[in-house]
Image 1: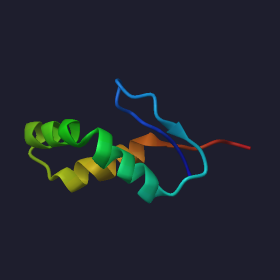
Image 2: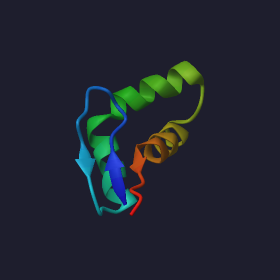
Image 3: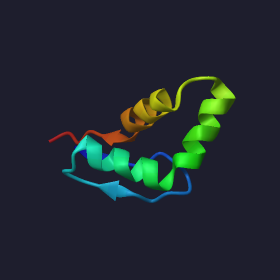
Image 4: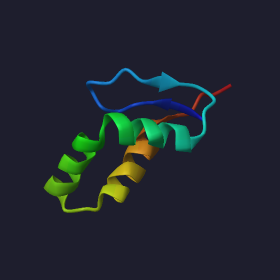
Length: 62
């Protein structure tokens, strides 16, 4: 899959990687930001991760 990180402070873009690799990026670089979103919205961090992964997927039409 292709990913373009949705966090404004991040310029992470990768093509042809597994979702697990992108999830590793999120946990290493954006743990605090995801926890903050979790606290503000009262949803679990795992759900924030899932939504961030989903919103970061880039689909390329061929």
